[in-house]
Image 1 (cartoon, rainbow, N blue to C red):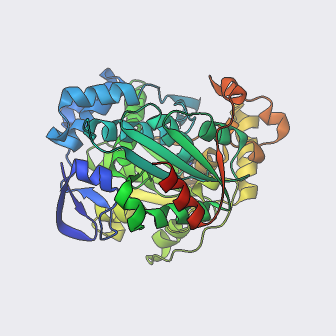
Image 2 (spheres, rainbow, N blue to C red; image 1 turned 180 degrees about the vertical axis):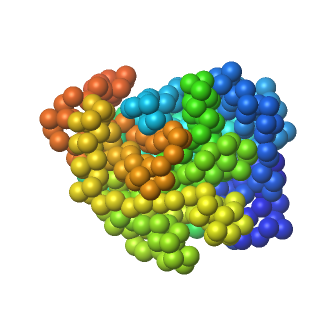
Image 3 (cartoon, rainbow, N blue to C red; image 1 turned 90 degrees about the horizontal axis):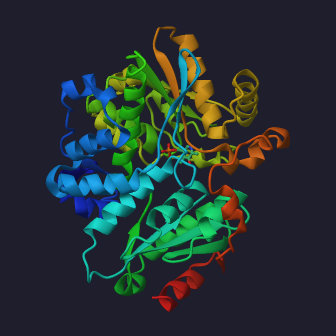
Length: 435
Ligand SMILES: *Cc1c(COP(=O)(O)O)cnc(C)c1O
């Protein structure tokens, strides 16, 4: 697999280089030079395969010989060791549950696969790979558990003090081993600025081999295609072959992977992006002009993104053809009141407790069906377990949530975090003092 930059189609880098760089120097995004189309016979019979078997076919088609198929199979067996079931709320509405991994959010797919690919490409004797990551909550937990115990790597997570939920903080701070948590007295934006400054600091780069784990890494995108194929396989085994996927979207990595799957031959009828009031993409689809805004805080805070960094990748997949894009994606926006009402409705009508992000997808999925009636199945993606977002859920309903396996053990573990003011001098001192 060779990749170009969305800012320079003449550039070619290897998969390994793209994984370690995360971003090309020209600040574009890496894209595969060709999008492979899967054998139609494979898609026709996809219901015969397991999630891991499907993942291997898809990943092999994309990555090619950069990772031999046997090694890729081992990486997938280790990384994708949990299910992504479609649960039906009624005959034509399903929820694709992506929160059955160790950090209870869909980011486990990307983080676990990427960590193992980085571990695979790190040779014995290479300098320790230092992964720096700023998190508003979910990314850090997925990256921590993804890299925990991966040889040759060390992770430093910066999170804003008092601004992540209890379960999220426990997932960030109870790992030990090769995972370090920094509790920054500031906001998520402060954390992100500290990481960015470190990447551009020559003193730090002289002594540490830094890499980023953020969502634009190509090794996070690839595994997110797996569950679209797997959901389709589950529907097919029920005799359903037409599906509209609705994706709660912030940075647009998740839906970007769905669109990549579509370009690889997955027969999806339509995609719907549900957003909170950070509505840069819905406005773009309407007006045709891309006009990013500073992000606004909402209950669905993992989607508080004013300038979605994966959007250029989607534009690239569609060669900037707005009409084609509009034929494949629709988008709807909801505020916090609507989100809370949707969570109540899901509970009342289906006894289903959803996180706020998932509730937004439910609303968008329902809206699309109203606007475009048809015989297709509406499947919306559930991106996190509701136990991660207690502030958005009434106490009465929260008490009814069945905690996922391991959540109670987590609460008993000691917190390991270093407190830090939001200034770069302190962060730099920390990095250099702990080589
Ligand atoms: C990250 C995240 C999202 C947004 O996904 P994108 O790929 O950034 O669009 C939605 N829901 C949850 C729970 C998340 O953690």
